[in-house]
Length: 301
Image 1 (cartoon, rainbow, N blue to C red):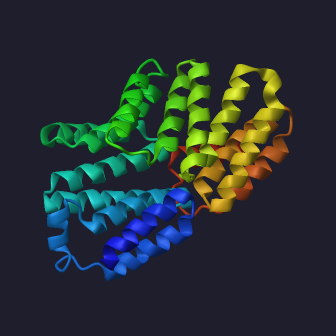
Image 2 (cartoon, rainbow, N blue to C red):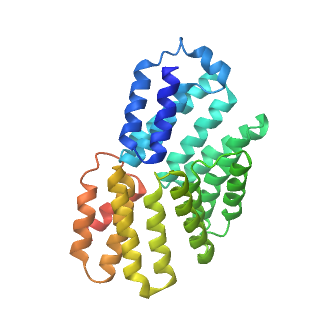
Image 3 (cartoon, rainbow, N blue to C red):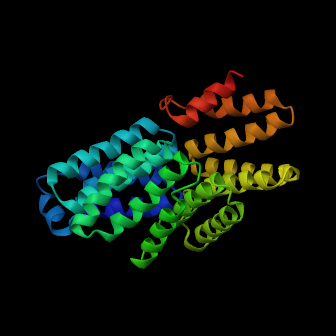
């Protein structure tokens, strides 16, 4: 029961934005876990608690600024789930792998993981896996098609999520909808999605992706009007402050890149580079990921 409790507490703390605390509970779970001792629990509950823990660790590690360790955690969970041959466990692991690839901005890998998850969900009637996969895959398609496709799939996934009684991760999913709508030039829909995401985070306390919601709001303000620079900058700075408060280094970097674009646009190139450097130099890994490649390029401008 302690193994399960550590995972559940980590899940709750992680969604509240208490990332380091959450990861500490998963480290305790890892020390307690015995695959032989806990095999029966996995068989009875259709999800091995260690798989659940490794999946959660993937999300937390990315947020905290460890993109490569995040990927290793979810890839390990997928391998373990394949070995156990429990469809619901494998579906869960594949969804989380897609989750991490989405945060790493890798749409091709998101599609690969979600297409396998959708096939599995269809074969075994896994409604939750189908709903989550539709959201992540919809984002990937929207990115690859500049918003021409994928938006309806995200909306369908959100509806399915609510239909099976879940509100968890909704601010993140709504942020993906906002991004997809922005890419497709549907700015009113994008703003509505961002507003709903912010309200959902405030209502439920599901705040780990809240910095990205504020960053997107700033980006949408700029897309709507060149005169909204001050308001957009305020939103981006709020995103940075929220990310710092959670120690969400990856989200802090992304918001800082948005701030740097604003600063550069008004001729403050040196200030933009200083801001990026301050975050970039705290990373130890993940230098091939999209955000860090962009940061490195902007540092050299």
